[in-house]
Image 1 (cartoon, rainbow, N blue to C red):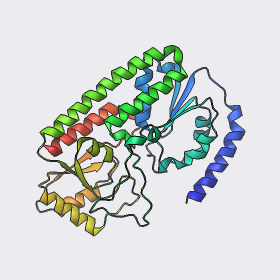
Image 2 (cartoon, helix red, strand yellow; image 1 turned 30 degrees about the vertical axis):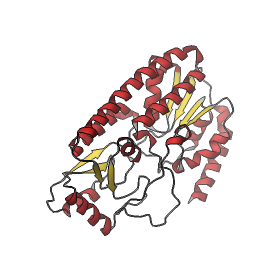
Image 3 (cartoon, rainbow, N blue to C red; image 1 turned 180 degrees about the vertical axis):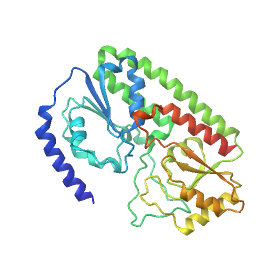
Image 4 (cartoon, rainbow, N blue to C red; image 1 turned 60 degrees about the vertical axis):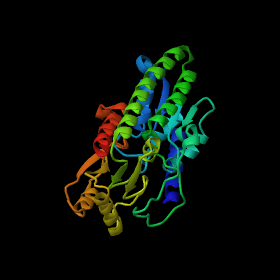
Length: 312
């Protein structure tokens, strides 16, 4: 499969080489990002000056980074950027050759490099359904679901934007400080909810992309799959284990992520003693598009409300 993707990208790169010279340059600096949280951070940092940039979100069709298939147009867009920002990790391996061929004038920000000291390996916790083919441990890619990571990422992004447009550097710094205050306030609210809660555990009948979030607040968790798992069917052992955990911990809520059909979570509830737990959804922001008219803060606010109910 990886070999097929590589051949596909080589063809696209060839097409890009033939086509890029035909793209008309505009006066605006081009910022290209891969996922919605980064896009929203860039929009907040550029602020009232965002109209002086061409800001492109590659994954704007509701597909997440795990299964995104780049087009020739996407590759041309990256190759013509002045600033390119992406997550990194296994799902972004297709970008390695493209990034290595970008001109020196193109700034590149890889969030997993920015956050290198905070990176965590994906965990295989008790009760999880394992992959059919076990692979080596990889770093968890869902770095944006930590407010601390968001603040550090925004600092690096703001610096890159200042370097792209030094004349308005003070404006971008001020926008960063204002946005950081919002993130700090939300982070404090999360901590207050955790500190005042009577429970300390989350149970996901789904994939689990919230490793950085639970680590930030000292929460425990159980889940059907790892965050980047490609599995879609939970084993009988996983269903039974999580149902028993629901009973043992007297959990009134089980969690699923946005985009889930919630079938696994529903099956787990059916196998509990009381069979009346409610399924709540947490936003992973892996399927958000610019048409959804929500922000990163909005999504994290919704996650805060869910945590408040679960931990109460």
